View 1: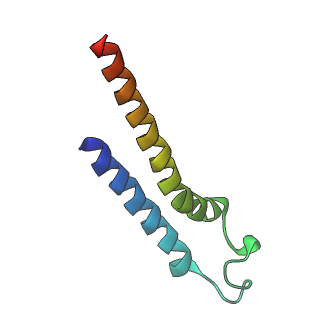
View 2: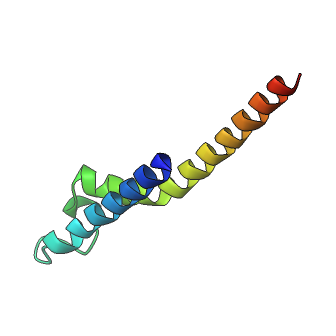
Length: 76
């Protein structure tokens, strides 16, 4: 249960950080969401936001694999 709460909290904070670009956008500087208009952190947040579900999927598959492996070893 704790893992699920931490997972949702991380996803929530990534979403909140992605909003910061919208709040601090300056149209006089350059076009919207151009690479020269945003910092490295603002470039990293959308990548992490899109990658997070895939990382969760990998973690779930690994946990299922571990559970099956432990169950097989305990049944011997």
